[in-house]
Length: 185
Image 1 (cartoon, rainbow, N blue to C red):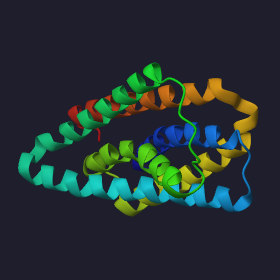
Image 2: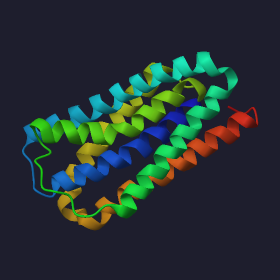
Image 3: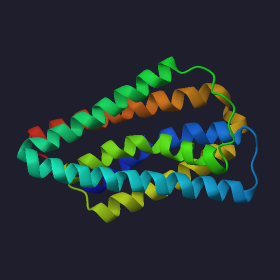
């Protein structure tokens, strides 16, 4: 059950990565660029999860049993923010997301939601190493698939993926809170 929780969260996070990878893949990339992007996105997702984990631990010590619900609330708020951003987003300014500052900004932008996930890791009952490895692997797979199919899927799916990621995070956060309230998780 615990692994399914982390897999669901990793997939929800990876939809955001998938959206960016589709956009990057529309231009076509060489192998080196694909490896750079996949490694950067995975490292950013795992790194932000660790930062969130530490912040979550501090909050847990300060807030006690209620910190878990705060973590789930953060997850829900991040999902809502992703939904709002997906609905409001207009044309993106052209930026090379395969190297340099563009790649760094893309990696950080897709990993902000991992901060909230890291915050709630303490409370979903999943070993940290398993969580980080799962997030990293799913991120790399999502990047690879997104880039590979970027030309085929086009702009419409790119916009929808971020919306779906937001909805999935809201469902995950609410579901984890309900499970904890019922004493199941």
